[in-house]
Length: 280
Image (tube, rainbow, N blue to C red; front, side):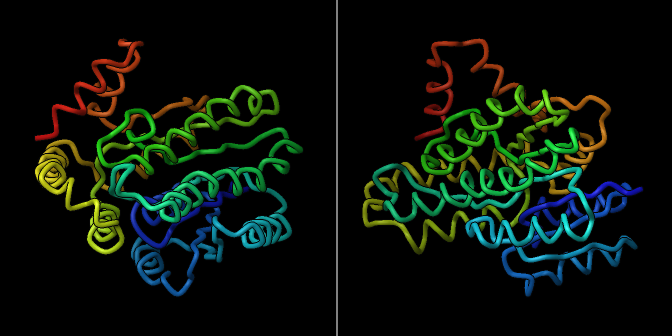
């Protein structure tokens, strides 16, 4: 019997690749997205791979949408074996550059969205005393990055939520895992840049002499250490299929090395210094 997996944010990037690779690995995949009109790239990749997916509407920012989708999946399939929390978006700007409504939006999508979907799925897993909850976090959930104040806040919150949930979930046979990529070659970076160009307050002019060179250095770093959406998808499948999955999956040597600084330096000074060294 195929295991049932729900994946959020599957219209592009990591969610798209993960859905197809999970289907190739024998899962019954319910690929969800806020706007199913954007499903064409996912359908094309699934057809190319010779797999079938079930595509459903799920807006992680809407309580009614979340509960309707989860309830419908449980009615149709009787269970959800794996949840992959992937839906999210970035935001570029320091605290002074970020309006309150933008902060609420990024927190709602990246943190409360994960909370809503996990909370909706958890009771069925608890009742069956089995399941896996896999959440796509980021190096930005481990290390504070310049000009990523809101995004890091959301990803740090996801890390704290899942680290708190994991030992309790394990008592009910549910494994919790975090996937922690660094730089990934998806449309995510372009969307972040678009936010900067169109939505930020005039304070961005004050920071432009710092931000411009910083973006250049990040791009240079991403060409050296970046991964593809397929790379991350393979790690997610490993977490979904391992007999005893890990709690954290740092997806590259770069992420592992960067995170290790924080674990060694409990005072945090070296992390602040390392991030600051990327600024002009």
